[in-house]
Length: 271
Image (cartoon, rainbow, N blue to C red; front, side):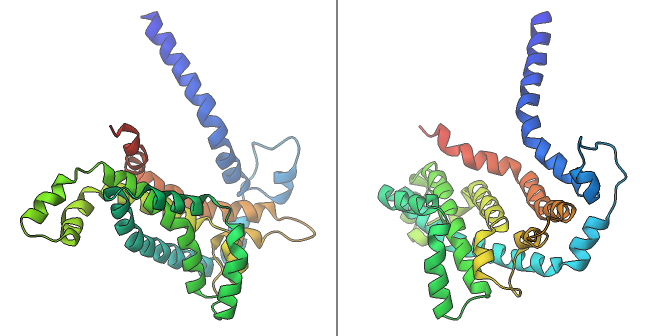
């Protein structure tokens, strides 16, 4: 009886050692969003304080937060949707026809630092007069979402036996029909995983919005940047804006957690 008890205690302590460092920044951010500037920068840090909603009033009242929310939603949903339309057939082709070189090329494009694409994007969109437009942001965010979709779904499609669409094709269905009617419904957990991760990456992207957008199309991460100036940083506003930004991403991840875990580990058991 003692050995299982000691084992459970040790396992629980090990989990705490892993979880606490990851959750501490979120807890600190959440607490600081209800503090005054004086309480935030005080030393030693104040764990007991009088909460205030002034920081959230500045985010939603003084900043154009709802416009940023709308812009982030439009850019995120459109970039993920177009990435799925292009990426799902591409991933299926890579999986069925063993196009490993194409997959590696797509992954290399994803692994390259995003700043290396900024200058070409800026020149193209400037000359096309697409600066400060949803088109520019959607296309630039697809650079993030599309490789994620292809990477996850190609591994997922490889786990589906080719005989399933082959039997449908024997019955008279085309390959496209078999893909839409059989393969896609079976691959929904992977598609949910790719959609969730792609949307989160788009939602949190700062660099493309900072360079390619102006006041009309700025996204949520810019709301955090607005609380920073040359003279000082409004840490309360930064923390409140950060809480408002990460909350939808956390909720989305919690809702589709089991699909995300399954989609990311499906390739690990492929025999």
